[in-house]
Each structure stands twice: as structure tokens, then as C-alpha cells.
Image 1 (cartoon, one colour):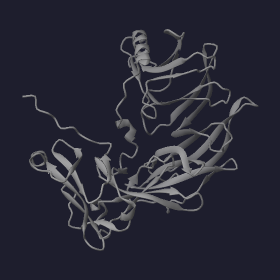
Image 2 (cartoon, rainbow, N blue to C red; image 1 turned 180 degrees about the horizontal axis):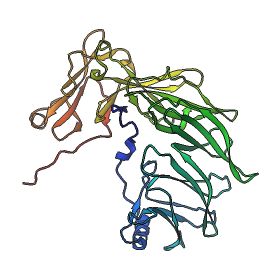
Image 3 (cartoon, rainbow, N blue to C red; image 1 turned 135 degrees about the vertical axis):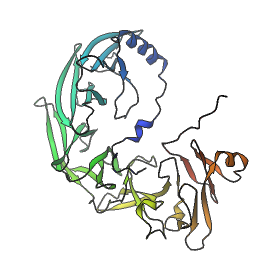
Image 4 (tube, helix red, strand yellow; image 1 turned 180 degrees about the vertical axis):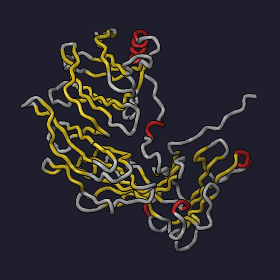
Length: 411
């Protein structure tokens, strides 16, 4: 994905995801919860959406009985964020306790055995809603119908993973204050002294716009890591890849290797289980065109496990993220966009050597599409246009994360 705005690099595209319907059991539980909410209160989801469920169910205390955790907001009370824990008796649910949260927003919420004792802790991030202010991370332990805070730390972002492969999760916390501090610290619970302790701290670059995307997962074959997309200046970016060697956080790529003129989002784009770094490539023939007018190709790479990047695949993605299509492997460095193409009108993908048209993107008016779109398949639809694709080969194409459905007249 390509992020164009230099002023809003923090908007998470996952926030555009639709919320799935609850299973029947959760619908029944939700009805019970709604009946117990104070007047004016509403159930809330984390703003940093990793799991879209508002109600999370797990056996928190490892007693063989399921508990449910839900958060809600009371906008007219001094304490805005609250949580509830419910317990199942096999046939219905009973409220066990209510607890006060922190701040004004629920930023994140994970259920994970972070203390390595077979029980599930609540890892919760709270926010004031002000992006200039650090957020607050709290780890809660639930035991004997009581909820206890076992760890607290301010943060900008955090991820949970087993980076050192010892079978125990760490919380890796990013702390960022522009032009002051940028550091990544991995913290792990030490059961021998019964407290959380830092494993390793890595100093990052503080003189940047921000760390707008922080994710964790496989970064090479059998190597877990953290990938941080970093904004620089008005719209440029680079990507840091961090792994843990001998319990020491280590950057494996330089900012020069992963620099791009516009911000992109790293992800496991091809769903192979390994995170790809999204880079930008100027189509052949567009080298002297202003950056803002270039129809960029996105090339996805992964860390090669040693000292560089390995190309994975190439993609054209609409600048407004309305559609995309992946290039066949044989197109790499052999296809460009005709310099006569016009953004928002017509894009002609041609063979560099022969000039042969390989694919076309055309923007139709709604009426023109209805009259004739022979050979074109629908990619996306807006209030005013239909975007179609025609190609000499079958392309892996689809809708992006942004689409506006046309308004249908009810006359």
C-alpha cells in the first residue's frame, strides 16, 4: 500500500475493515452485557485494530472455565474507560467484576500468556487521544476473581512476539519523542524474581516524522522480527527490520537500503507467512517526471536473512488505494507505463522493448461503462467512475482498501 499524505502517516488501513457478525453465543453474551451497561455507556473496540472483536473470550486463570472481557466508555463520567469480566457456567454468563481503565481511548487489547504460567493476561493500551502524548500500557493478571496490575509502561507502539525463540513471549515497546528519543525495548517476565525485566534496548533514529507502522512476524525463513516503517520529512520513508541475536535487538538493514520517496506499508502482502517491505520503483521512461506525477510501481522485498533484500514480486496499486494488480514474474523490468498515459483517465502498460500493450486501466463514466466496457473487467467503482482492467494475460487483481459505493437514487 502507498501512503500519499505526509501529514497523516499514522492512519491504519485496518481501521477501514468491516466488523464481522458475532457468533450466536457472543450475541447472547452481548445482550447480557448491554443490559448491565450504565446509562449512556457504549461498548468499544481498540482503535489500533488487530482483532476486530469487541468481546474476547479465553480461560484467563487456567481453571477450565471461559471468561469474557469487554471494554466500554462512559462519556459523562470522570473515568471514561471501563472493563468487565464475565464468566461462563456452561449454560449462561455471569458478571464477575468491573474495573476502571485509563485515559480517554482504548488503543489496544491483547489476551496472551505473557507471564509464562499457563494463564492468560490482559495486555491493554490506553490513550488520551492526543498523538503528541505517550500512551500507557498495563498488563493485568486475573486470579481468584480479582484483577491485579502487574506491569505498567508508557509507549508509542508495542508488539508481542517470541523474538529470541525461548518459547516465552516478550513485549517490545517503541518509545518515540520527535527529535529527542527513539528506542525499542524488549521486556520479558522473569519468573525467578517475579517481575518484568528488559532483555535488550535498541536506539533508533529520533530525527524523523514518526514510526507510522510497527508490526511483528516472520521476517525471513524461521526468523521472527519487528518491522518499522518510518516517515522522513514531508512524504519520504524507510523501513527498519529488527531481529534478536543472542538476546540483543539488532537492525539488519540500513535506511539507505529501504528508502522510498513516498511512505509505503510493510505487510505480508502475498500471504506466505513472511513480512514484505514495500518499495517504490519508477516506471521506465518516467525518470524525469515530477515525483507527484509518477504512477509508481510497488516492488515487494523481504530480508534475505543476511545483509540485503530479496525481490519477491511487483504490483501496480492505485494511488488512492482503490485497486491493485500483481505483475506476472516475467513482467519484472520488462513492462512500463506509456508516457502518454494520464492518471485518472487511462494507463497503458506496455512491453519496454516492443511497445506492445500488455494491460490497460481505463476510468469510465458510469454511463460509458453501462454502454460498452467490452474486454474490461471491473476493478473498482466510485460515485462518478468505474475503473476497468483489460489484459493480455490473466492478472491477480482486486479492489484496494478504499472504495466508495455509488449512491442509488430512490426516486
